[in-house]
Length: 102
Image (cartoon, rainbow, N blue to C red; front, top):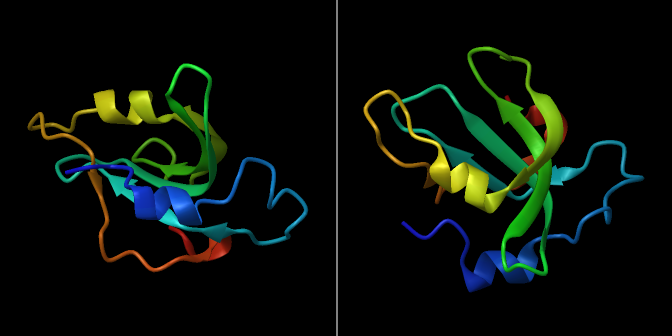
């Protein structure tokens, strides 16, 4: 599965564009189908090396309330769940406020 398509890139807010928004919109969700990690992406931007830097919230078994921060697409692509399955993009995820992403 392609984690980042041209259609997603066209709609993805640039880094810091929602910085002053009290409850920014998450526009993208990645998850491990066989593990306990979920990433909710709020913003992203292509870097000089071709990788993508995202800002958003990651929810895991270690941090069930989630933690805000930055992550690279390449880091997400490297994660594997307990059965070794790769991260997937939630094709049916509807953008929603960050406060509703759990």
